[in-house]
Image (tube, rainbow, N blue to C red; front, side, top):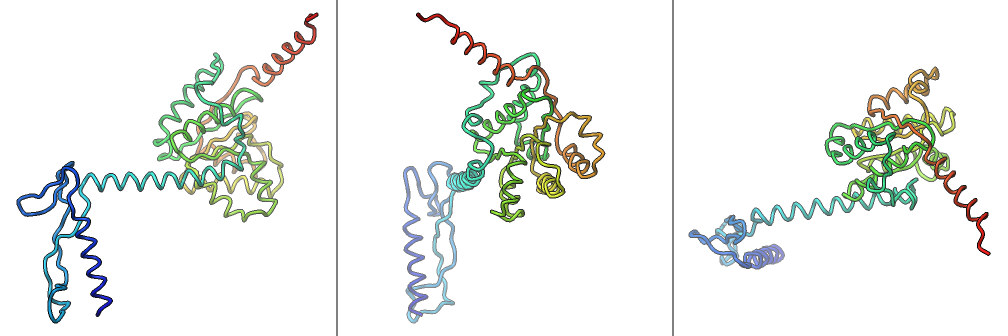
Length: 297
C-alpha cells in the first residue's frame, strides 16, 4: 500500500507541476487552464483515488485536473517527433552513403552546376521536376532509367537528383551493382540484411547497370535488389550504357526478367550528345599542350 500511495502522490505532484500557467496562459470560467496561444485547454478532469481519505480506500475517488497537451503543444510535439524520425533516417542513410559510389566529386554536384546543352536541356528539366515532386514519385513508386552512350551525363544527372533530395533530408543511397555484388560475395553481411538496409533509403540510385559480371549469382542478386524495391513500393533510378534495343531484345531470360521489372518501375530517358568525358579529356590535352609548348623564357 505504501508503494502504491507513493506512486500516486508522485503522479499528483507531477500533474500539479505541469498544471502551472506559462506566458499568456489563463483560466476559463470553469477553472481549467487554457493555452494563451491556441486557446485550447491544457487540463482535463479525471477520477483519482482520494489520498487524503483515512483509512485509504482506492475505491473512493475525487475529481482532479490533470495536464494534457493543448493544440499548439501537440502540434509542436508531433513536429519534433517527425524531425527526430527524419534525423534517424538520415543517419541510417548517411551510414549507407559512406559505403556508396557517391564520392566527394559527386557530392558537390548540383542542378545549379549542370552544364546545359541542346542535348541535355530536356532531360535536365525532367530530372529537376522529378526531384521537386519526389513525394508524389515516392507515393507512386515511380523510378527512372537513364540510358545512353558513355559520358553523356547519366551519372551526373542522377547525382543531381540525389544531392537535391539529400539537402531536403530525404534519405538517398547511390551505389553500383558491381560494388553491391562485391559486398555480397565478401560475406561481410547477409544478403537479406544488406537489401533491408538499402531499403531504408527513400530513393536508391544504381549506377552502370550492365557492368556487372553475367554469372548466375550476380544476375540473381541484381534481380533481388530491383525486385525488393518493387515489393517495398520504393522507387529506384538506374543508369546504363546499354541501348533500349539491347535491353528489350535480350535473348537471355536471366536479363529479360530484370529488364521487365525495371521497365515496370522506371520511366526511360535517353541521354545523347557528345561524351563529356571525351570533351574534358580533349580540353585538358589542349591545355597541357599549350602549357608545355609555351615560351616562358
